[in-house]
Image (cartoon, rainbow, N blue to C red):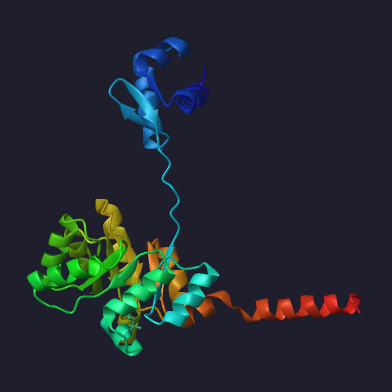
Length: 280
Ligand code: G3P
């Protein structure tokens, strides 16, 4: 029996039983234990199974999680529309977007949580770790899925560490370099928000930073998700998707632009015009 056939047989057993021992395989496939061990090692290298003491188990397939799309706004009408389209996973706000709506932070956050059942990020305005933590704890009481967004400063990182240990989800914001992102992950942040557009504004390639962050997190197996922020165009969304980032947070105007294409509009118009001809 060739190696390929033998390994196919091993996979078949794993599919049926979930686990198998070297001894069992060596008996059923009539080869030595060392041959089976070599097979298992090779197959583990290909991500086909996971070796255990004396055998192997089926490799769990990573669930496809998809790319997260957050809406970067505190505007209720925009959140309602985007939720209605079924396209967004959550909402990110910041002190500026809250002020723009002229409403109280808690009331507005509650209003948003009544519309969408995903993660909603809100930002404490305190700057000292202890105070950030107390503000964050109050915000976290508003809704089960609150993400406390904290700017990257020494005090901010201290707060992130305390909050993540206490089970409160955090997002480190105003990130402009992969080294800052590395620290955010070390502190235990749930999300990291690199501001791509603001780097572009000062003549740097924001997406290069994003690619570096994605690579750094991959290198060390950090669980922190990269959500690209400060996005101003559909092209940036495409680049973020290609970089392998966990998602983006985008203004409503960009969401609309992502959907539309002049050739789609032209095509729809032509289909309808042609249809009208026969229905006359
Ligand atoms: O969430 C904040 C961030 O997305 C802000 O973007 O356009 O003000 O740089 P921008």
